Image 1 (cartoon, helix red, strand yellow):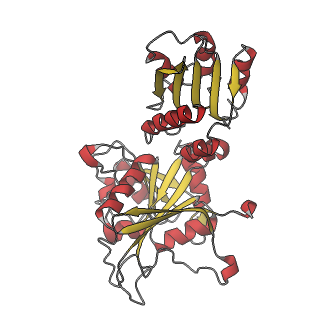
Image 2 (tube, helix red, strand yellow):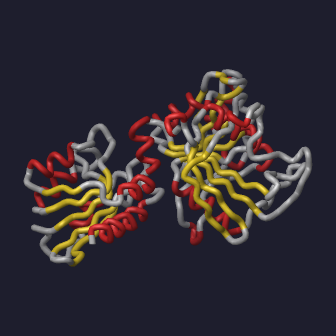
Image 3 (cartoon, helix red, strand yellow):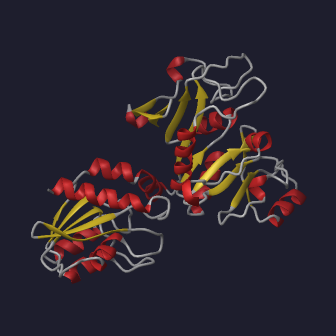
Length: 368
């Protein structure tokens, strides 16, 4: 029963995907006499947390009941009061937790409040599933850096466009719909100036029935070459546009971009372009907890080289186009020896129509 109730809580937590950033996804279920009497989730950043919503939705008195929560209840005052205190006040008898919150403001403190008030606490219920659900939050809250997903789409022979640059469309409709779900999930979407000049993308979220939120658009553009008429600068969108440039950008162009409503972040020059590590630190300070990298081959290589990528979603379509000059997902100088290749771990295979998607995480030195 404990596993089933936690599965239900995790499913509830998913409802907040894309809307709670930079807060975690949390679900809660209240059980009394073997029956669910209340449940809730955190649906929007700044709104009530999952535990409070579960109490509000309860069909009877919760005193003496068990509560299943996917993440340790908060113990500090933020935009809402501490949930640990609310659990004590409501008279919950036992609390089953998925994850201990790694947030230094919370970690272990919420559990201590519960235990100090005679509430039994059981931890580690479906912990791996909870970590997967909140992989974005877990990285951001412990490092202050955004979780970065590199998305690529290529043909069976590893090409992202034909030799003349035609790339619409490599993957099918179902794959493209999934990409828009990814855009809704993250706080920011990043592309290079080469992609903007070649394709003039909107970088917005377009789900069925107009649902979903737009991520902040981040353009890597060391010299601020972006045309003022580019779509990303002329959208009716609540999300901001950030131009990441360097000192090579003219003051006049920076002023013009700001006049279009864009924010310009100036970074040091690294490897002849934008310092991506510096940029990610600045994005974290902007409360951008996650970034979907939809870059071209040069940007992808730079991102991998400097170590900002955490996860790879590589779509492969059953098409062959050939061409010695047709670009591949990762360009740049590349590695010289196979022993230096960037490796993935925890691989999973997904199918979208005729396409497949390989999902994996970058293997770090500490994973060896």
